[in-house]
Image 1 (cartoon, rainbow, N blue to C red):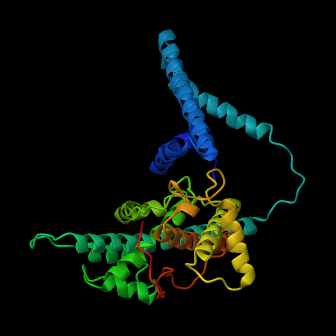
Image 2 (image 1 turned 90 degrees about the horizontal axis):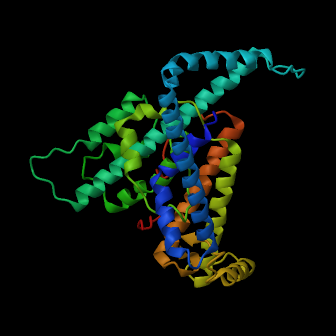
Image 3 (image 1 turned 60 degrees about the vertical axis):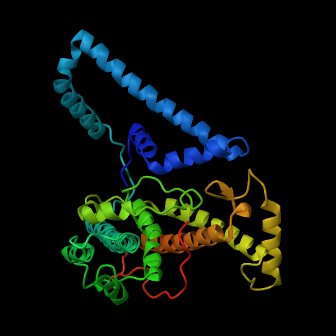
Length: 359
């Protein structure tokens, strides 16, 4: 993965809508939660740094303009670049370590490209399914004029065919997409709408999105992240960057921690039956230790897990379960470096469980 200049990384973080949603949640909790105070302090520092960089750039341009030096910049920049490039070559440290063979390097590069292509294919499938779910929900909730033709089904099938994916997707997913526009029931809509979570994970893995908020910070769904990919599928294949395995491992562990906290709360409230007495005792201990603790208990939006409703708890549990399982799959592929060669399908294609209503 290529590194970015600090200013560019900072701008990409501050330009995300999820960051400003978290800011508002932190503002609401700042009087009672030290974590919210830390986040606001970090944000203030980041904004201050960005302002310093912008003001510094403006001041530099003004000074250069005043001296007339700015007119020489187009000529100086290529020269400076050439000098730095030559210096890197002249003073490159000598390495006595055995060098990888060209064949081995080519093989690793081919595997990396194949892995990126696999994640991109999977992202397009989820984008199509989520976008179709959004279209179906719209058709259920709105009555269109009789002269309006809905073309979502046609556009989604064409997007998959153009990417040579239509014959490779699983039969359950294909059957769902073949159904005429307006033909999905609410259970099917809710099921595939849950694909928002794998899709945003894949966007993060492919470095389309720079940052992945925690489950509690990202309970809401956004059909827009699917539609923009359906409208421009090529963006999935424009780069070759992938997230590193260590970052995925950390996010997987965070998702598992959230999942365990939600399960403990559900068992302690009697919403879920413990497997044995030991698990019941663990759930009681965890819930009682964290109940009402504004500084330590996990957050679901602006509420503690111990304060969440049954529906909110079920929704967070479902998202945390999807995230931990999906990132475990991603991590395995990143570590082995070999993508599967068989067909691709959504993780919901063969499920029969009731999907909780989105919050």
